[in-house]
Image (cartoon, rainbow, N blue to C red; front, side, top):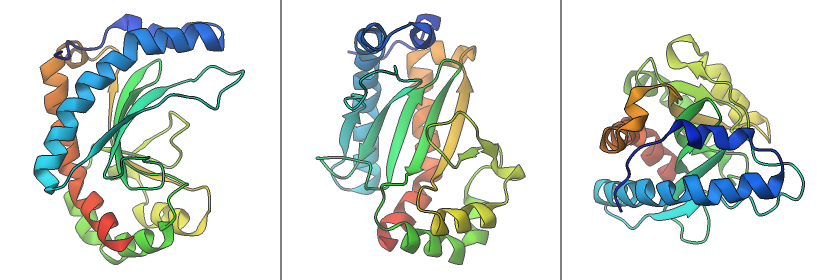
Length: 207
């Protein structure tokens, strides 16, 4: 199957009341699209990196009461999971799509990766486009543009605070017309991944 794009109905999923009803909509509306997007991006990353990459689609299995506010796919070099590894994410909240290189709090080598980033902070600033955004908590919508971010402070917090995270990439608003064009979105996702790939490579070496 070929990805045909996101619709307003996909974003409306997060207005559905109740865990079971929302999860059913996520599984029917969004997860098949994640499979299509993920297949494209896994192949792209494997070709870029020269090693096998694996697709993981969030199942939200631990939820028993509160319905998820967002959902995502993740791609990592580990077949069993992604949370403890540097990885890439594509997902959506009710008002935007995100494309991330993600280092989240479960990562066991946060300190080493943060030190490697801090040691090369000037190079990282040059590598990442200034209009890209950074999140310090993947559960929240908040993100700061690179050009407005105190990168040193963000990386120091990532190093020192157990629950701190570091995600960098792009947000596309729900009304962005490019989201409705499947292959245009795939192109944007691939370009975003390519632009943050130096951070992934640096993180993999440091862990």
